[in-house]
Length: 79
Image (cartoon, rainbow, N blue to C red; front, side):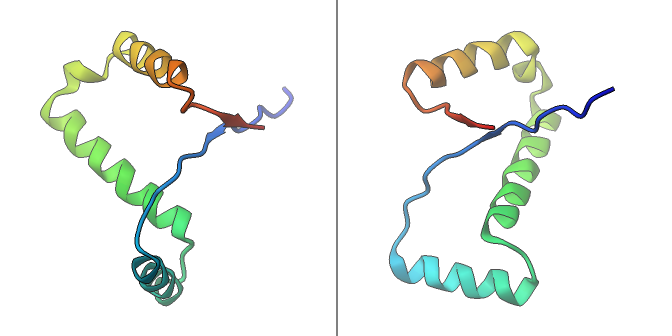
């Protein structure tokens, strides 16, 4: 079976330049990329909310939200 393409979405995070510089330093100290630490935090929040309200995370709700995001032009995939 051929490998499947990994699809990624990109989003913009606005922060003060000083915060960005400090975050970059913190990531270096942890031996991680900025992207990986943001991803780790986002997935932790998702796990916590799924535990609290799993009914909100149905395939139907995800589809609706993805359509809303795409309609606003904020869902752009690379790959």
